[in-house]
Length: 151
Image (cartoon, rainbow, N blue to C red):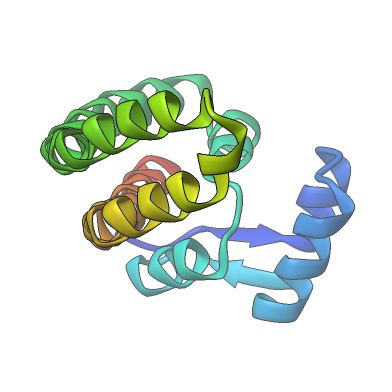
């Protein structure tokens, strides 16, 4: 498959926002070949895949992209769900104890500190799962964009 090109002029013509135009220029210059490697680079750099897919793909390519994106979204939700449930199992009783304690103004500060202490490691564990899952989802979307754009 021969890689197609996205240019700075295309982004400007499609009225991309200032931040995305600046990012494009910083990362790619005035144009970029839409390759797998550059799709991964775009994901890591934080390009807006939603805008790119809606504005740069043909209608047919956009439909193909959406099909791949849907399965990537389901995988992301599944990974995130179990991590969220583990966090909530720790957070819920800690929050309930906090709510009981704040009824007594004097106890608010220590109750809040206990809540933060009780949920900190659970929150960090959740974020440790959610963050790479989110990055994997973005990367999957950009790879789907690459395939759809070049077809």
